[in-house]
Length: 259
Image (cartoon, rainbow, N blue to C red; front, side, top):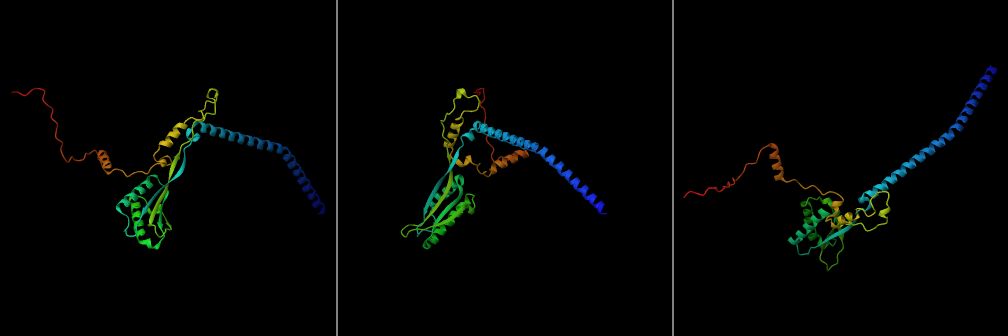
């Protein structure tokens, strides 16, 4: 039994030694191949990355909206509404001013409308009436009250209570033009020159009335009820009944009347 066990142990050690040598020879043979595969993959990815950069540079030169973009900054609109102590809310003229300011905010505003009210307790009642009227006007133009941001500011004793309305709106910044760094007579790449499209972008930025139109489309206005009714009648193949009959025009006779 001891001889058989010794023979089995010898065979196992010999097989392990042979397997280890075979794996070592295989690793020595496959290591250069692995290095070559990794190097080839790296070169391929680098070439693809360079081609992507070249494509982006060519696109930037061909598209003038990318080469000469219109940037935006922020402007501020303010309206100060004085609310005397002996007045109950806003006057008619102040309501018109607030309503126009709210319409301007809806058309051009960006972000929330900031309303700053006095902090003094003696002005609480008159300021509350004025704020209630501003919130009503905000709902009348189709905006929710969450678009309003309420703040408080300190006032001096001799100053009349004033409600301050303000909002931000975008301003279009025109790009600078007139740069000619390349010689167009020796330009072999056949790409647009550096100043291509800059004048169009600059004119657009200077002539636009509402810079927010360049950022996003305007809200859709409600459809006309009369136009919708006429389109529906045309689809049904019927015409609305005429309320009044128009007089028929008579053409004069070519022959003179008989005596």
